Amino acid sequence: MNINEQIEGIEIKVRQVALKLERLQRENATLIAENQQLKTDMDKQEAMIIALKNKLETAQSAMEQRADEETEHSRQQKQLIDQYIQEIDKCIEWLHRN
Image (cartoon, rainbow, N blue to C red):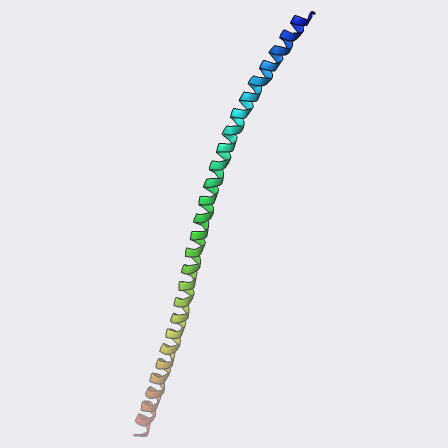
């Protein structure tokens, strides 16, 4: 094998390596762009999750407040019923006496 053949062989291998390098650089650029898009999508989803968590917390707080209000309302209604029962008992006693 003479020097010209060796040089041609080296040139062919260098071109092959250069082509492979170009292909890998394009693939790398594609992967970088895809990665960036995925990060953007993930940021949007995280923002949506935070918004949904806030809505959930607001809804739960409102439900707890409503439950507290209903409990207070129920307590007031029970007191009112107890007062009516006492008045009815007094009326029954009065009727029994007369």
